[in-house]
Length: 367
Image (cartoon, rainbow, N blue to C red; front, side, top):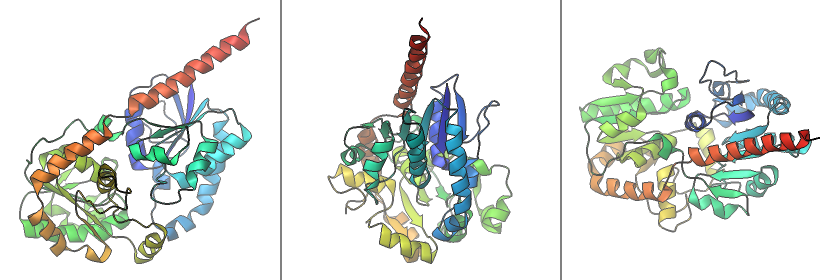
């Protein structure tokens, strides 16, 4: 069976890796991180790794050509698997379904229609056959094709705390150079002030890179780790750039502060497009736990310091005041809310499609 996968984000590829452990004998096509000798992706996710409205504008022609090439490649696939990245994957689904309406399309890791552009939900439902929701509250935005499949991080995080514990502080300033340039210098100030063991978590994809060139000479202040989950579990606190890592810390039970700073123009545009009271995934889910509108509630699990509020004094104050026992207790509630992992459920969908394809082949072969 051939599966065309479109996994443009780092986090999507982590989830894809977990999914693939349940699926053997499949030929993978498209955009993804190569894991096995036989993998021959059309593109690497690194080619899509950009942030900021200006940067996206400069790569529009690349995206357009990639869309055409992925559509052409879809004709060789038995199944399409889309993961996150709605700006690319929704147009791809439209092209594929328009030209090959019987080609099955699964969308796993759905776009955040609850945050903005809710009009995308009926479009996704029109052009896709099965929708794998990883957030329970997502189901309310779709009519009949969406199912809650669990959350992929519960497949990937076996470690979690039942009480406040750990030593040292973890710093996670993001994976993109722009994020690192904006956030890491502030983390350096915090690390100097705390005078405790400081661990810098570097994305595994950057292993072997010149870290001083990427982070600057102050990288020598930190112990280096390429294992985020193990480091978060061992630490007593963390300072984390916005993203999946914030939810990872919450599910592990390590108290943390979200710290984020974007370019002024990007922040100005985003603030007018997306009306949210919080941006951290753990806080967004925590809103839902308290029957508030996700991302627009007032109940928070952890502090968030964004743009001008992001400075060392605020981070140090949050570190001193955090009720660690409460955080661990509430993090356990959040883990129970998500309930289970998602890889097995989604793999069953793909296996069912493979069985149906095989059955159809033998039916058509009957004299």
